[in-house]
Image 1 (cartoon, one colour):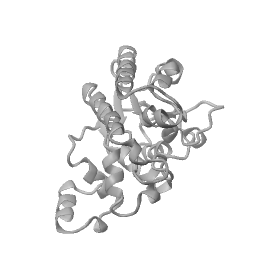
Image 2 (cartoon, one colour):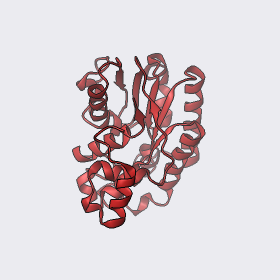
Image 3 (cartoon, one colour):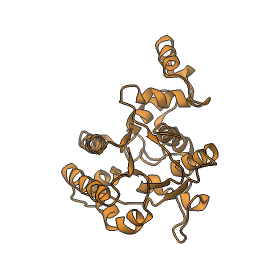
Image 4 (tube, helix red, strand yellow):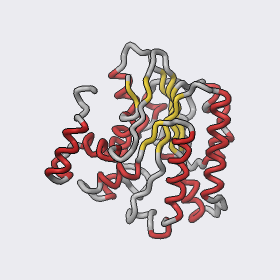
Length: 254
């Protein structure tokens, strides 16, 4: 346990004695993991870490250049924030961190670019957050995929990944939505919950570290409204990106 991480027992004590108003952001994130079986992956020297996903991961990264550990290539969201913490905390591990998220992507679009944007990089740690567009675009872009499509496409992608990189350590982020903030309305439910459940099933099936982002954002709204954490119910604000990075860092240990 690092000095910055609160003891889980202290969190439970605080939560039982008072409200979320007395908790730090890190403690709020920890509260989101209390009902989950917390799985952490061990970082090793020379690990290659890859963030993959849609616009939430992309977060405005520069795509005309390639390279690791460069701020302009990591974007301005949770991958950049988590990466800066990792690189600061582990200066002797020679970590190489990449962000290859692309705005608008669904699972099948990850698959179309997977050789170049994943397998050829040979990551030791692969973080995937995908699924919002697989549902959202059925409402806005005439996409005809279903939650079954999402589940099958995701399983095929992970099978392909494991065949090429059998020792890769996986981190899977839960697709999330903050209801009542611009884009996210009652039309999202209950259908969107099926995508969240499918992602959780993938994490369990492939022994991935699981990040319960929906619970993280639900709990954060006990301190501030959804519009404080997201711009439209889907894309995080600066505070929301830090919230995500804090949760992501809970899945690794060094």
